[in-house]
Length: 616
Image (cartoon, rainbow, N blue to C red; front, side, top):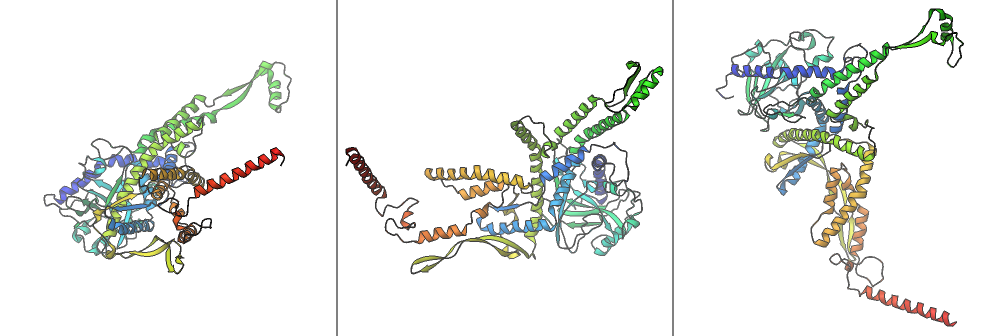
């Protein structure tokens, strides 16, 4: 820590940082209450109060459209010699994705970003440090981790102005750790640790995590097996340090609990995701649910009003007192019966109450407004059916995808930054020995024989065991660029994948072949295979590389190419037929011979016609 920043000054700044975000936390609590509904951790509720959970429906549609599978990483370098190691980093990241279940981490962070901010913390749990993942679990030593950070525990410099706290003097989060863990580690100021108050659930302000603990109102001693204390870990970029201060706002010390050098990438341990456009001179985005919430509430109020009116609706029979017998006869009659009465105007049916049709129109308009500002989840979910033509349906789908693609770009950028942090630990680990499986292409092998070269092994794609070790490391970490392949985290049903594969086969493949032929005629180098593979990746087709591996075809071509030139008319393709890509002319002029045969056949046909004409 810089000497001019005193512990008390930093702790006061941290408290102001929490205070700055307090309104956002309170609004987030309200939004999440509406998201989970009244029956979340409750045994009963008022029927009709929240009949239309529009927020839940929008999130349920948006999240699967962004992340439904593990990402495919692309690691490249400007140095050709580093390509092998770049591929090892790709394999290591994809292996580690599954180890820490990064897919569900991203999904949770997206939901957090819809409500306010999505925050991820990436680090390495060393044997001499304590990093708390959440309130109850600890990270095993030596583990590279990425875990979501609850916005209730997030804190940043209160003077920050740049988008997503890029100019923040510090970023941190509040964690709860067993006191005994801090004392036994020997890394903290034990005298100050002893003075930290225990976490008291009753004294704390209600948090989002308490939504599912409504029936638990006990002290921390009952909730935890060990006594818990609250601390705040801060990353200070200018000092490249990690500073630990008390997490209770009523506690102030004249010294830090701990100050240590930060071990990690220069970008720090935190990755922040925002899904809405920036707000000028403010680090926080506009919460998406903050725009939806009013329409969600109004739609439910209107739905409840319609239901209440419908429940009040009733039909009653009124009659003159003198027509009591006629009224009774009408009541006793079955559907379709005829009833004779003295006065048809003496009894009438009176309808009271009932909902107004204008209310339904108003509710429909509220739904349309909500759908419009929430990235059109009806179209994304296939629920929009009011398009009058196929062209209009395509236009609606295209317009709906604009907002979704913008959200995807934000998520993929944040995921790339997060993956790069984990790759830094993989790259710098001096003891890493990670076994990986690599797919490689083995070309055809030949053996020289008296008859010429013969194929002994056809080309094939095989798997081999490789290891990510310090000895395999090449270059500096800054020599590598990281990216997540587009659409790699999406998921499509079998029918959609089949349609896209058919569309690719009918449109892309013929066009690529024609382009290759045109390029060849113009003398322009063009790698049609690479072009097809790139286009297939963009369309989400990940098996196209297997199509270009046909051992039987390659073996046949090799055998045909090895045949010696034979006499004209013999079967097979002689080597002379491949001369700069054109048919060879070393065996005579086949075109001239063909013309001579045609002339002979024409003469014979003419003789036959003359004989028939003369009767010969």
